[in-house]
Image 1 (tube, rainbow, N blue to C red):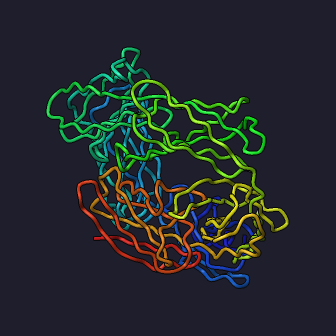
Image 2 (cartoon, one colour):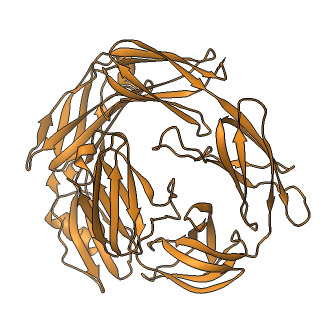
Length: 493
């Protein structure tokens, strides 16, 4: 409050918001970044402060930010009404823009530096982007955003020769060119005004099924997407009395490779499939091939089965869940902050995630009820604590666990700023792939970069190694020292 009052008197009039990264109000001892923002001004930050006692005399100077404005060229009135404008800075910062019915747009309060502007029509997926340099001290930058005319990509989606309605179709060539549509009752789709180029055309269902086709677009093109799917039917029972287990979560993981290595191999990634009162489940539109079906429920060890999905028939599986007492431990944060709950991931010997959950921490104690009998690895993450890997014996009490204060890695590859995705492999100070309990990766240590950037949180202090791989064969490698409570910025040439 004292800092906010001092800033208001010395810098600018009006209400002022002062925040601490990762905290608010009274803060525990540690390293903090102080920021201030006010409508019409570029945000200001103060170098990280080591707080061991009350701090005074911190001054943040707010400078008038630049206004970025111009015209949207190439869109109709109805498209302008569905236009979304976002600008993000390579130095940090995010702004949303405004557009009027006449096609004039504005972004306010942009700090000096490089800004990437993305404009997308939500109704059609048409997109355009540009990069803008805001000079130091500039009050206004003028730049038009152009949506060029192009070609039409149309086609039909077939499942085992039958029209497949309701399939989301997206076409992406870079951050600059994209579009999307949905197949109708006859299985047909249409995406207009795509500039010439190479496009990754992805067909996606709501349950996470994806199929990718590559299209060279130099004229109007009609695409036939052939999909071969099947169904998995199963029942989940208790290993004690054979009774059905209702409310168990079911996930299918592809075993024989994904159509796109940059897409999740989990069939219902981001969705929940649960067994009914009879312990039964049914997975629809499963791509043909080999799958691992994994079932989890609190109080039981995970169960799984391997199935092969072909064009005819529906493979039936029965999976048994064994009750388990699990593992208990006391949990605390090195920073001294309180802990109400923790993210926990159970790993097999290869580092593959078998189950994940959020467990309550009551009077400093936590219980993970999904750990089978034997020795296993757990990843525990809570509050400002790092994702920490433990080796535990179940059933039993693991004793005391103290999570070190986490650090953050912000990785940039400028050469990939116009690319939709790339893959990053991240290895920790212990030489093992990084596994987060709160944001599970597709495979151990594997993460996604979008527009040439990745922000990975929850890292233990120490030296981390990383490799970035693009589907065209390009790669970049490096390492960085992550510190407690800090963010290390790395740009790979």
